[in-house]
Image 1: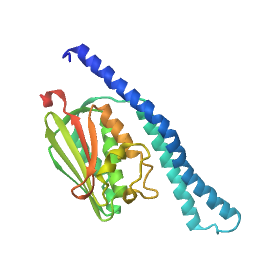
Image 2: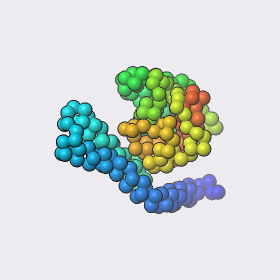
Image 3: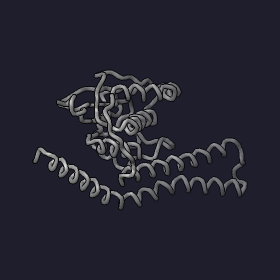
Image 4: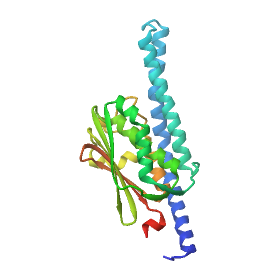
Length: 251
């Protein structure tokens, strides 16, 4: 409970120890999950290629599109696995500085306006402005982009994604809510587990590998923050992120 630099050092060491212990126990489970996730698109590719070779199916644009879909799925899965592995072992580089969280949210929303429009989705933002936090702007941008892509992938069309930013007890509270379908409350905690996609209502072929929220959790925890999921009042899923304000603003 020391309030000097030694207390801060002990807190940092405890934070590192807890992170290492969690990573060690989860990595064993990942091996089985990853192999299963990779086998599915590979099995489909092998089956379709064998059917083409045997003349059972004609080689046309439809079959080419099907093959390309599975290849893209493999591509996204391997990219996400690599990014998550780097994040989990501390390989992602963080450069902390004072930044405006509200401004970053606005910027990320603007960069996804076109893809949202193509999917008949509306993205809105309300709440506090000029909210300063000590963070890595690139990683926060990555965090927000992952959350938007997650909502766009799993929300029924037409739909809505709502960002809200509030201040509470020296922390910035950012919530991201979307419309139906939702997730059962008892499954929300598991959404941050790598490769977890057991809720059928928010599982779609090609929508992702179930790694986006796991990456989000790693980024938030690296910023000494908290992240949680629960059913949204809009009928879908709500992700709530709590980040400490920059020291002066928190005081």
